[in-house]
Length: 458
Image (cartoon, rainbow, N blue to C red):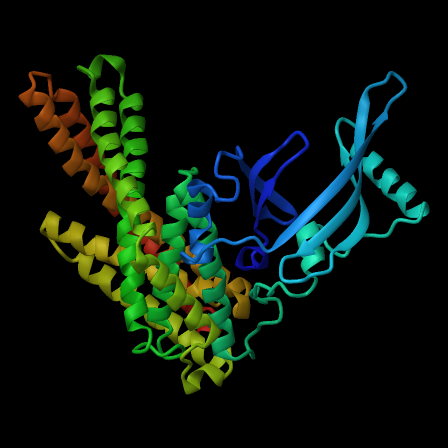
């Protein structure tokens, strides 16, 4: 039932051409991704791989069948004049029984699917079957039709009705809910090693933590302290794999940009091997974290926060009265840290200070994004300015980290008798990138500062 509430279907199918275990995840409006595994010997035991993919939703509870559906399908193919298939019409006689009820339920349904015809054909077929007496199904899922209204509806953040006069608490809770859902949606993708999944999960985790920290006068900061600590732990467990992935792409690109006669030895191969070994370890660490009881307890705590939030009296006040000053405070912290950073003359100290400013730029960006539902375009524009500043500072920090990594790899190569010239050249390239970023910083900073005077920020 938890899965059904999220639009996820886990079923065991026998008969037909697609017998096996099927897990269907929603990946977009009206679109689902299906994962299939064979039936296996243990007829009624859910495969461990599929059970793991839904663990964030079941929270480790046992998976039990909730319904049994039997379908007798008559398949008709619509052909063109040359006998080529254009569409298929599945004519299903369905009998279903929820396992907590004694009486089965029967109904009849049609499903039309294009195979090679033009999209306009689908509209024509829809008109024809309606004219013949068919009516649209109340649900696109046999399971949901059978279970009727007993599946709990997954709450969706309703941001359309929010505005400056909305309660500040409603604005922040809608943002928290959306990123709780984003974290859950990323979980199975991380387990399947999908592209960019770790990054998406880490971003959702950081946004949740940052929002609770920045808007602590709306959602009681002291009450959320333990949850913020757990979100920080999760982001840390996810960071290794993503950071090495970004660094690998960056350094491979740097090597490819060099003239061939300046690449002495197996530079690209050594860099790739060094970072991919660490990526495998970091990925194993991330997956291990997702299987920990601590992670499931974090998800429970997130649900509890959203279902019964520890709101302060300020949460009931209008968003326009409460929230702008909190976004402005995040900006002022960033402005102060940048001022201190650029004044430092020791390179290592300046690098560390700019890294801290980068974190503050990200917090200011997240703060603005959290209130877009209430303030619209001005908040979105301010977030965009903070993003530009964050990306510049992020590029600078990446150059610092890459230099340390290149030095370590260069020492390894030298110790094994290889020419380390190219690694020194790459370090010089990264130093030049950092200098360029520092040169561009005042202009980007000045552009970002203009966001302070937006009317919504006061």
